[in-house]
Structures are given as C-alpha cells and as structure tokens.
Length: 268
Image (cartoon, rainbow, N blue to C red; front, side, top):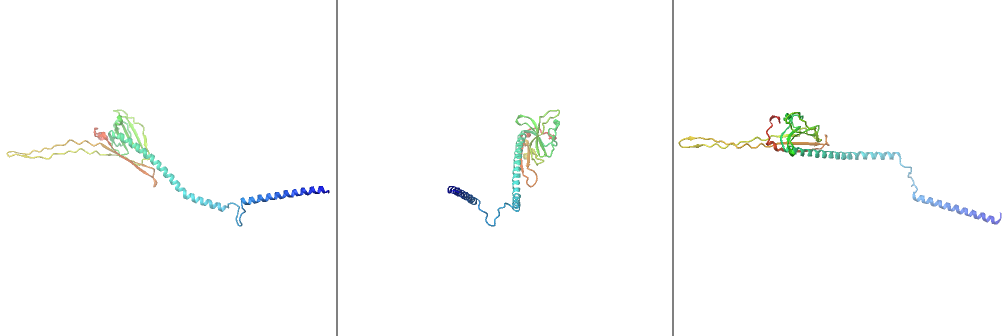
C-alpha cells in the first residue's frame, strides 16, 4: 500500500472513531437526563404498581365512608321534600279557608249536613251531621248560591248549585281545593245565645183608707240573636310516622246574615 493510501485509511479510521465517541457521549447524556427526570428506585422499594390487597383495602374504606355519609344525605333530601310538600299543601289550605270565609261571611243559612248528596230543594240544608261537611246559603258578591265543602279521603272539596223552587237540583261536580287534610271532622257550629228578658222590681202603694197593692213588671225587648259561628280546623300533614309534620290551619267565621234570616227549623 502506498503511503498516500495509508494516510487516507488512517483519516477515515480517525473520523469513524470520532463519530463513535460522539454517539457514545450523546447516549450518556440521554441516560443522564433520564436519570434526572426519573430517579432510580431506592434500595428496598418496589415499583410494580398497586397490589390486590391494597385495592381491596381502598374499596373497604370507601364503602365504610359512604355508609356513614349516605344516610345523612338521604335524610336531608327527605326533609327538604317533606317541607316543600307541607308548605304547598298549607298554602292551598289557607287559600281554601279564605274562600270559605268569604262565602260563610254573607250566609243566611248554615248547617252541617248528614249527607253531602243533594237531589231536591228539600235537601238544601239537612242538618244533623257530625262535621265532615258544611253547607251554606251564600250571597257573596251579590250572587245567591248554595256552597258546601267536605273532607273526603284527605281532600277538601267544594261544590255549588243555584237554589230552585222545585224540581231536581243540579250541583256542580266536586272541585278539590286542598289536599293532605288529616282532620276527618273539621267543621263545627257554635250555638247562638238565646234572647234574655228582664223584669222591673215590684212596687206597693198603701193609702190611709184603702189599701191597694199593685205589681207591675216590664220586659225589655228581646236581644238580637247573635250570628252563627262556623269553626273550621284543618290539619295538614306530610304523612304518618315519626318524621311526619302536621300544620294546623283554623279559623272562626261568623255568618253575619244568619241573625236576620228566618230560622230553617229542623231542616238545618
């Protein structure tokens, strides 16, 4: 081999060695960087992941925490639902009570019917009931009509019809006005006080010749009969059991026109 060829081969060999050294240095730098980002595990530690026992323990702790917290969350939700239900039912009962006050306030007849069914004018005020229903002859807002309310199945219902002289009565369908009523006999009537009379004291007059005794008594005019008073006591409840909530809604309403109307006798 000529000296020129030997020199060329040596140069290529040096370049190859230099390139190999450069690649080696780059590899070492990459390894150093990798070691810096993720340090090697310390002696004695494990890097295999989560074991089955650790996973089971985690699930057990989570289940215990949920069993403690879940009843409180459920109770809070139930209490919120119960409060909303009772508030809505109470508002409806108060609105119905306001309607009853308007109709009863201008009623000329009022009674507790023995039956809520109305078939003829003679049934308009068949009194003697226990208090599950009330019926009035009202003239509210200048409109004369019979109005009655009853509590049936926990629902306060209202029904109206126009008075007729004869023939069949056509009452309107029952209209529910309030729900969740647990008082089965919410209506009662206060007995009107009877009229009172007073007498003047007896006087005696005596003369020297003739003795006379005169007795006079005067009776004051009969006191006006007080209007009949309807006592309404509605109890709104969220249900039964220890967690139930009951809200009373009550009022005493005077039927102002009953003191001027002719007493209906045994029919009311």
